[in-house]
Length: 133
Length: 133
DNA sequence: AATAAAAATAGGAATTGTTCCTAATTTTAG
DNA sequence: CTAAAATTAGGAACAATTCCTATTTTTATT
Image (cartoon, rainbow over all chains, first blue to last red; front, side):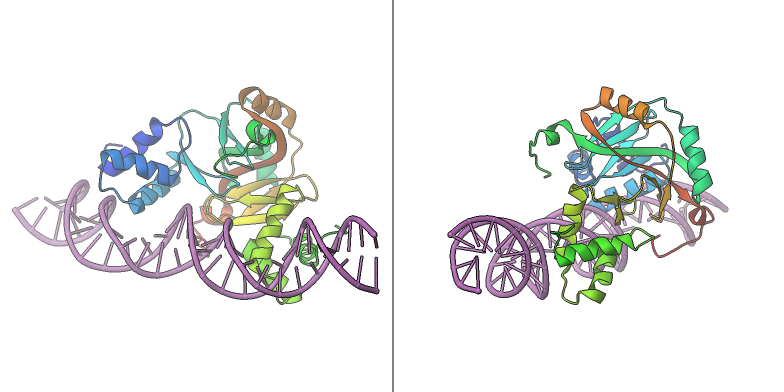
């Protein structure tokens, strides 16, 4: 963090203070408030690097939007297939069993505990429309 | 299926005969072999409808590619964060507990058993590069 | 079988999200 | 203090997806 660039620190702090899971575009917009010349390319590049360094999680939603989440506490994501909203949830399920199943059956050796489950959220079940569908 | 259009039947049959998880573009390419004038828009529209009807599963990978899978047998997906490859796996983990955790904590009421876990595949761990990274 | 209404399609234009490029700036190491 | 390495801003380029419209196909009704 010490040797993070000003821009990168800003991006991390935006994620720290965000309860939702902002998109790159939203992070860019918020960043502009403090760093008036920051470019969208910089936002993307840093999000990419932070995600590869496992500081943040990149979440691809079923409606195409990509969202970002700071990896603070260990939690999982339930995502609505129709509007793409992400709901955090906690669970003490035994992931070891799942991890073993995966290890035995696939070539995916490292298990990142990035797990998501799809569903339909309350609003979408009621047929409420929003900006995403 | 009976009242599916010729084009839609073709798309389903392509997914039926595909071991991998093809992208819309790949499905389009394969479809063209049999239906020389099928358009990409038709492929997208049908994939969307089939996915909403729960006939197929739309899988968003961490590298941006969107892939499709026919819902035949119940299985889950382990996806490589770096190359986006999808590995099917089976598990008899008790999803009921997970489902309960989700139900209690989120507004996501319907649980679709579409679950994916991210990781790093063998090849990517070895640092092998491929067309996607 | 004829016809009107509804649904689906082909083809391509438009839009959106993301990556890539380059010159300039900032940081790091010696 | 200086040279090399890394990062940035800004914008062009690219790729995936959606949208639009005229045409074709299907369905339902008689």
